[in-house]
Length: 325
Image 1: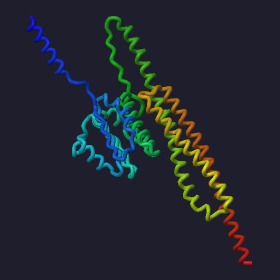
Image 2 (image 1 turned 90 degrees about the horizontal axis):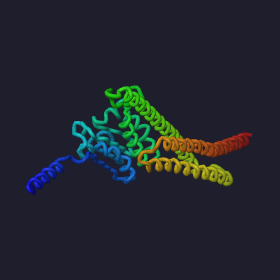
Image 3 (image 1 turned 120 degrees about the vertical axis):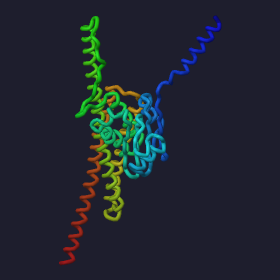
Image 4 (image 1 turned 45 degrees about the vertical axis):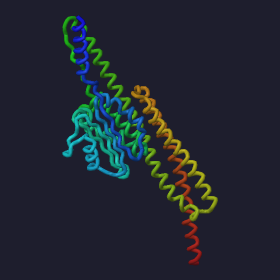
């Protein structure tokens, strides 16, 4: 009897050892410049890793498509002919060349190839953070968008693909069919509400990001002009310009900080609710409004400088006329 027990125990142990481990993907981060918050990236990639995805993030100083391919080959995620391992999801950013790209294996085609969705995510989710210099936000937002696309794949022409479980009608089949129809309707409503919240957030974030980027360009131009203020205007006028431009600059820095804070608050939540997405969208709208107010402040500086230039021009003309007389 004891021998039978020992034999059964040994067989059970062998069976346990033969059961494969749960699928778990791998995360590869190549960030020699230390531009990423690795913890935040790991949290954003976690849902994809649970799907057995091999996620690779490359943030390099210079490069392009060929460099991207070489790195994927070196890391065993692609072959020299460009063919991918089917579970690969890779994000590549060459900072100095202002180049970004998202590549993926066949397993994710439904989520990322339909409607060129990978490009949509690159432009709408990855690039806004990169443009603001917040590489962590760009990468984590893109990873979150990829996960959302896998959960609710796009369909040709737009919309989400909801794949309901087939309902088998047997005993009590009509009741089951009614319950299944109700569940399907609820699932469609939930998916539609989620998509609407995500789109609302995306639009608000892009609007705020665009406003901030435009302001940044204007402030750069204003800073260049300010270099010549002391040789162009009277001391009192220079003081007025410095005061106005300094106040506008401080306000702009505060707006940039609020924009970053919103993204960081979302990143702390593994799966934000629709309400949280909409709250973040409202916060981004407020950032856009504040950016517009800062733009008005900067416009006042630009107007003052234009008026001083016009006064200087008129003064020169008066001098020229006096010389001719």
